[in-house]
Length: 142
Image (tube, rainbow, N blue to C red; front, side, top):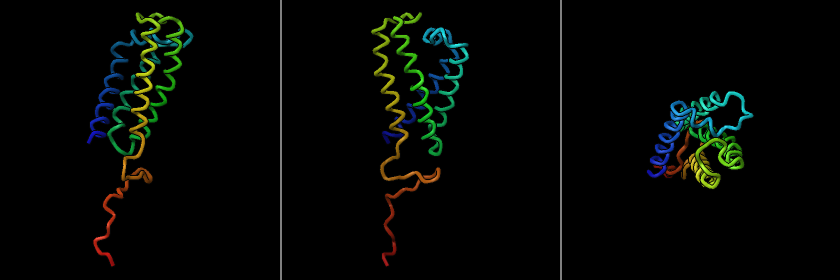
């Protein structure tokens, strides 16, 4: 039950975070290093990816891939976070220590996605499906 609630919360969080990348693109652009061409396009692509991946968390067949996609997005964004910290905020209104405090939060988000990418107790993924081994006792013990 907790895992389902957590998964729903993660999908909700990433879906609306993805929408925020479209609605507040200028805010997110301030985090992008100036050497990146077309930073607003990068923000839109990231937001679109987050929203799409959020919807892919829910079906069991696509959940693992969606979680790995989120891990990839965070893996790519961590160097951008370090750049923003190293430049003292890089045009944002945040100080370097405030931005540094976000790193553990981002690592938590990565751990959250990784946790949901793992098999649940008592089931194994086989060719895109799920086999539940909890009730494997035979009714005819012959």
